[in-house]
Length: 482
Image (cartoon, rainbow, N blue to C red; front, side, top):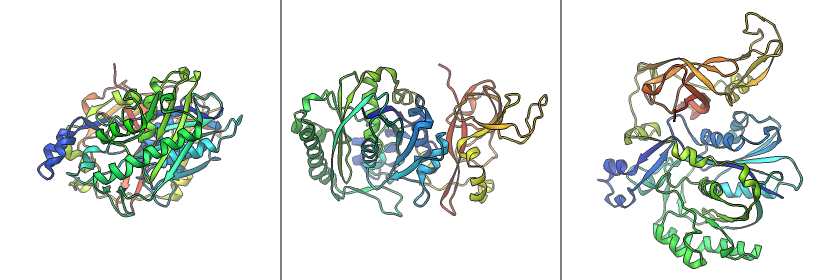
């Protein structure tokens, strides 16, 4: 049996009320008031598609032996790098071995489902090897545009294999068209699109039914055989039209999360799939359809193993905080310039030779553990940090990325250059040993206190604007008390 073995959805902490956007930019385009309901997910200043993908990937791998993962696919239309394997950056951050195949899927909003189909059709029956498919996007619409109202940031991941399958793969059907709906050139910052009627009437209304009917013919199933049909479409009237055209009841139409997350781009079909799997029962059939330069349609049947896997989407959806300042989002995304003071005028450039030598430490948060006394330390050194031991040459690799810790000390620095002042950092003591200084993120100054529990999160450490290069490291996220 081949299919999905684990899955996850990750929604960033911050949500922006669309009313704030309209209050700031509605004077330019009053018609956007029709889109000003609800809220959208906004990635933090230190998050991008890579860090979002790592977050979803780590959640999906919680119940999977990571040594069994041999392929990593990353789908995104907002890749930080054009000529550096983005999935390759994710491999050590996900705690995976170097001996894996990795690839980026991009160029289309259906890139995530295309990557998923590639993983499913490349899996062999009875093989213990698994493929991790991650997808993430942080798309930008111009200020005052409908896209700015509609777009949200998020990620999703699925693990594909032939063991402990929770949703069996039953087949797929694809169509590919060079249909100019959304487009963004190689050097463009913002998404652009053609007229809504064009997208609705000649795109969504034609391609999605074609892909769905093609899958039904291929599998010999009827639309009534499916518990949920999952497809991205931001137009309510068009969704009703598609349901009517396919003979599908509204109960079968999976909620697209537009009011609470937004249209997230390439990961959106997988995010909706994660929401459906959280409520699915054994025997349910699910159809996943993407849209963008054509369509992919995929059929799954849920197995009894679904009871053994807990979803993560609803938890990250609920763990939210309001982003109460629209301008803050513009500064975070480098849409609006701001003066950060002279301390910000530092040339952060990546020493790739040093990064190569320390790639496990920087990207994987791998330290050392003494084989003689069992003391964990970060970073690893030749001499054991335990004064009662002082053994030399006894360190073995020891990962801290999945370890919890406690805040030993902290400060909030209003003088340090920060995109989101004050800069917050301090010492973290890990459960099981090890201590190091980290930045704190996804929190406010008045929330920090000593002995507070923290988890580690892979984040963007800096952005080198002169060279268009992002540097990554790990930060500590305080665990909110219930």
